[in-house]
Image: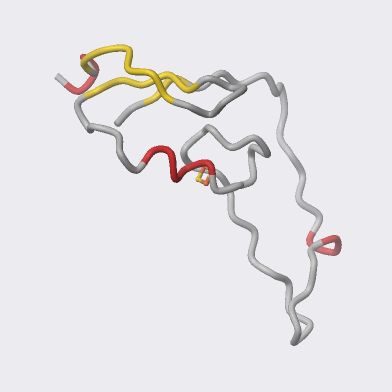
Length: 80
Ligand code: FES
């Protein structure tokens, strides 16, 4: 289930702990960092990873950045 991801950022994103939203008990709410690479709010997870659930592990995919829909490129030759 590999996928091609285009990155355009050239530096890190700083997360200032003092700006994190707090839960009902006054503790910082967890932040989910995108590990699939297709979030519209990258580097934060926005739920777009649900589109990856049907991927075949032996196939390479490309995701359309506008629609978040995958297209198959072909067999994943990097896993051979
Ligand atoms: S892990 Fe990438 S959108 Fe959730």
